[in-house]
Length: 388
Image (cartoon, rainbow, N blue to C red; front, side):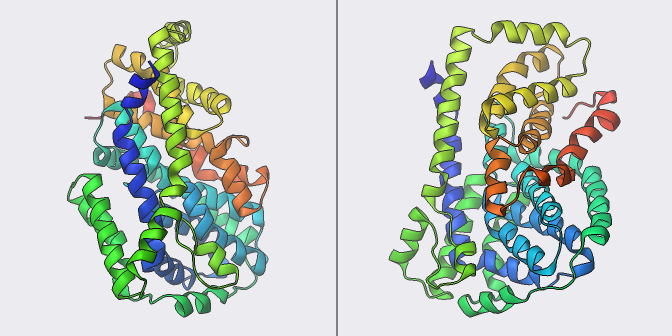
């Protein structure tokens, strides 16, 4: 039974492997330093909290990783916030909200690929649906962060990174190419494995011929993660990625899928599913999915377990109500993915809080993560819109 459950996510493991490799290659070839450098150079202290949210959204959409984004641009933004007198909790809340924007809907996101595999839907179609459902909450959240910028903004900016990045990387426009490849090929509807592979190849060429990294050394980075050979705070920020960085996530997905196979084969969740079906005529399907995802995220303590259990518990109800898989995928993305990051003991937010050196006081400021489900409940799903 466990083996049957695990066999359903083998494609995801290949994607996860490529995501880990991309995270290292993009660091080595200068893609991440390029966007961090030019992003930080645009900072206006008056709008810092809004900038922190938007920059986190952008970098996480490129990386597809909430933890990876928190460990790069998140750490940078927290350094700037603390040096400039901005409120650390508010800044961290904006960062957490931003990194989960990309974690939810990026082509390279492990969670987005997992949801697509479980619901048997097309990833790129899911991304279009997610961007559409997030538009209004994103605008509302930006307005809130604009207001918070005036209340909790910075007094000054620190240009430390603006000198460190050019000293260690060539940050010409060509270094942005690996990220542009992902975006362009996704728009052209190429398979995600193809777009990731082309991105890795372009990053390898840039790292070797522009950054001057040896091929053997680059292969090592792809396995164990990029390591900047210099001292100082910036080296700790930019280092990371590699195949080894996603092994724990791959193990969690495998083990969780094994449990899901056992639960399904033994029928241990049959009574819970029956209870949910008996209440489904009283509660709209999305709010019920939201409630289920809250309990699975609180119980499972990881985003992956929440996604798999929510899918298993709610799948029959969506079939019964005639809602297609695209609607189901969107509902999981707008519930299990974002709710997990609002539960302090869930790894989804516990790890970013450690990385950013803040406590649970940042969670109330992760505005986008609760504006999105609230918007879906009150403004969208009274119509029970079905996605094609």
